[in-house]
Image (cartoon, protein in one colour):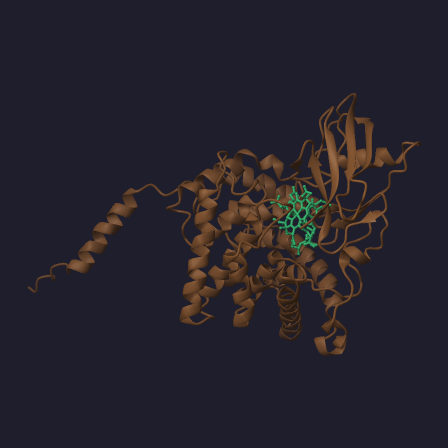
Length: 462
Ligand code: B12
């Protein structure tokens, strides 16, 4: 009888290595879905979709598609709402839209109607919408009911056009017209659709990473770095770039990941709680979540603080990682045997907190825009459960002080655009801080100040 050949040394080493690896416990949560709390969060998100005042948000759709169980008819309906919004907006081909777009002259913030609760989506496309269109295209790749080829192709053309606009902007102004976050989403979406991206466009993002140009609200920009890393990882994985560039992309992804681990805070967060899910996607996308203890620590921290994810936008950003998915998985999604068992869960009404609180409200406008640095300082009395938005509303009702402000609805909630008649324009924004100088991690509608706290609205550059 022929004898089986002795194991060759390479094979033997591999076997030993596999044995050693299988005896190392995998980092907690990598590849597992943490059933109970995650299901509750998915159901909550589903429960929030009914709000007719809210425009549909492509990241919410992505979160629903990347979940383990679904409400398929509600998902289909939501996709219909998205299609209505985007196809109406981009129904014209780029050529038909004319060359007016070659030199965009408007800006969403600058041109905002200026009325309270003005809606975010204007009817005219004037300024690159790289990020929103990218998220929508990612959503279309994740759907089981894709629209016809022609309309998808036209959307891809629009996205390529926006990305080029952003690239040109970055050459002229040192930053894209939108932001490096949106620019990265644009590259990521084209890559997931297996569309080629010009090397110079990719190199601009590599250079921004290399020179530390990602920033957010005066602090770290973990979210942006993470989205850029996902775009790099996708380009490398899909083999849509040459060997040399692929090597540079791999090195940049590694650098970003390494920095995230080094800068992980003692609570386990990368950046802050809201950027942590984006950072975790990088470990999932690069198959390193298993060996990286920092990933397990981040997941523990997120699970212990799930109640911080209250808005559809923040829920939508955390849910994919709770299901062990990154946006790169969209490229290989299939629609077979999807569980159709998810039920919506409507949020419980907020419990009224009895009593009142007094909150200090300060408005600052630094030089050179304003010769007088502090424009307003006043104590405002509000119900104990009031949000910062309630404080601003109460301030407008104080007879002796002419406090006015304006917000614009965005998928993240109301965004403060104007205070005391001063509009945030282009690269400036109304930053929210708690005295003496801590930048808030929430928007005006979600932050609930404590009694005696002083809040600062500061016109800042970004
Ligand atoms: C770029 C960015 C900004 C830019 C936006 C300007 C611009 N034209 O791009 C600047 C630097 C101005 C900014 C400001 C703020 N931001 Co910001 N921002 C982002 C970032 C990195 C990307 C947003 C984006 O482009 N999304 C893609 C597009 C397609 O989606 P979009 O929803 O249409 O995006 C628009 C809105 O989201 C809006 N926006 C940006 N930030 C915020 C924050 C809030 C609370 C609201 C309501 C709207 C809003 O501007 C975006 C571009 O037009 C996200 C990161 C993330 N994980 O989402 C953080 C993020 C959304 N921001 C955040 C915060 C906290 C703020 C500030 C409140 C910080 C502060 N203390 O002042 C302020 C907003 C204050 C205000 N005036 O209401 C948090 C929100 C967390 C939460 N609980 O909801 C995030 C998640 C960052 C984080 N990890 O903490 N931001």
